[in-house]
Image 1 (tube, rainbow, N blue to C red):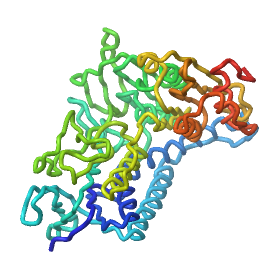
Image 2 (spheres, rainbow, N blue to C red; image 1 turned 180 degrees about the horizontal axis):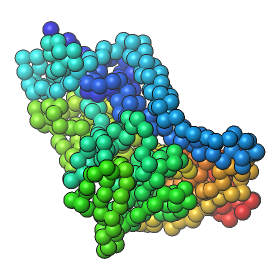
Image 3 (tube, rainbow, N blue to C red; image 1 turned 45 degrees about the vertical axis):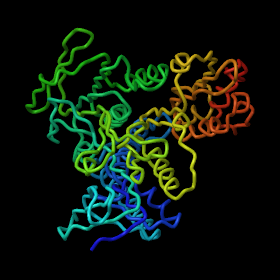
Image 4 (tube, helix red, strand yellow; image 1 turned 90 degrees about the vertical axis):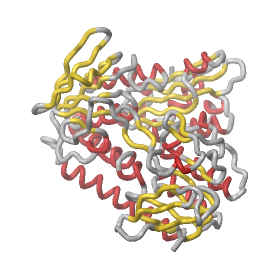
Length: 473
């Protein structure tokens, strides 16, 4: 029997379930279709499990140098089984929380694979959802007035580097490792690759990162990339840039061997495992888009500023539309989409004001544009930088590498970008994000009294440094 809804959301990841909650708050009868578990990639294969592992690695690395803090612990070891158990308990707790939110919002959840149908006896417009139920029962037919596609993404692979889960893996398979390898090659020095490199190195794994671009985390400010590379090498990680992996040279025999062309010279690399970390691709196949007029370009769904597709009653959000493939972005895209459905006239998202974080050790975080981008856009820039080496709280923590960098327009004083690398900067970047939302200028941040001793003092000093007024420089 067909069931009618105001909104049906295809995908129960972070973007999907947040959109469902907001739709429910707005009085819309709402359903989610999810073939896996509520919470999606972020909760089960991405943000949460990887950060749980990163935290365990950080604790282990700190324990190994506990004598620096005057604490004598004796020999320190990793029980990786318990590390994984802790990760799984965190996931389970949060998963139950999402399930509770669905019940609280009276949101119907259909556990199965959903596909969009074309015009039919159920509806003269495309958008009816056929759900192939996980339990093998008869397909459910959902007739929505509006659809939100939130099908997310999956790890991208490279031709010739087939994933076998034993020798060659993506982050999905790596999260399920039962034991730590002695060594690993990571193909890709972007955000995910660097987080895994940092984590595994802290666990004592010998790590080699091979990056195609001329620097790691190439979308970040050049000074952040340079400092991150320096600190990764300081941890003992081998970082190879300007390198093209030659997939056809892969040999799997009691480990992996692969060659890469590095600045014109072919070099061979060996390790126990190989992790492919070359970005993510949208899940847009097999969901019935061919039954609609929805456009797909460069592998992602095309939408307008309110996330409507070419079918005005069908919206799309999150990783499946490309752009900033981040959980917090998907959530706010979902909120915007359902508020538009409800006629609330939401403001379009300004992606330039969305913070980006890297949870390696050290962490990195940024909001706005890089110095190079500012110059390319025609701005005359002025820059303030301040090192954590002179921040008392950083020295107390024993983590004084890194800096805060603020880029402003020298004519208007507008803040164009804020970039940080160092201890706990992912928790600090929101101050910079709020400053940009409120159109604050460096002077205003600098004259905000930051408590002492805190890491956030570096933000205030960097803001003063924009005009040459830093106190402790």
